[in-house]
Amino acid sequence: MPYVNKINLRLDSKNNDYMSSCSKILGAVLPTKPNIYIKNEKVKIIWLSPDEWMVVNDQENELFIKLKNELGDLEASVTDVSENRTIIRLSGKKIITL
Image (tube, rainbow, N blue to C red; front, side, top):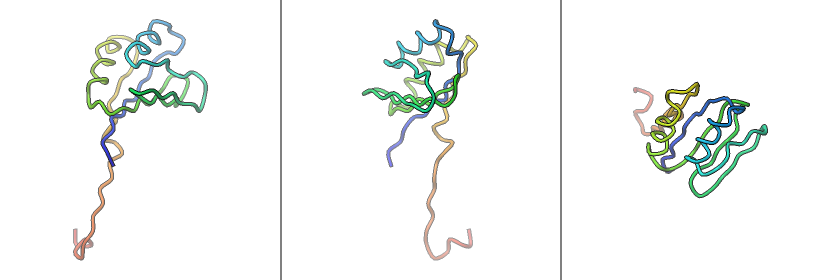
């Protein structure tokens, strides 16, 4: 399975400045309706709650850094959660002894 970068993004969806900044960086408008996602050639943006989204892409840290630089000092949260769901599969005769 290829590596994908996952960014948890939290901000006030009623703040037009925040939403506009994100749209410029992501190349898409953050969805504001429940249970939908938006996808383009750059990212997939998944609505999680009225103030939370999961941004999925394959650009390593580039997009995370852009979002963090733009929103870092504002009332927003940009968190790299790429590694929080890693699966390690072990096999072999001595697996139980680990």
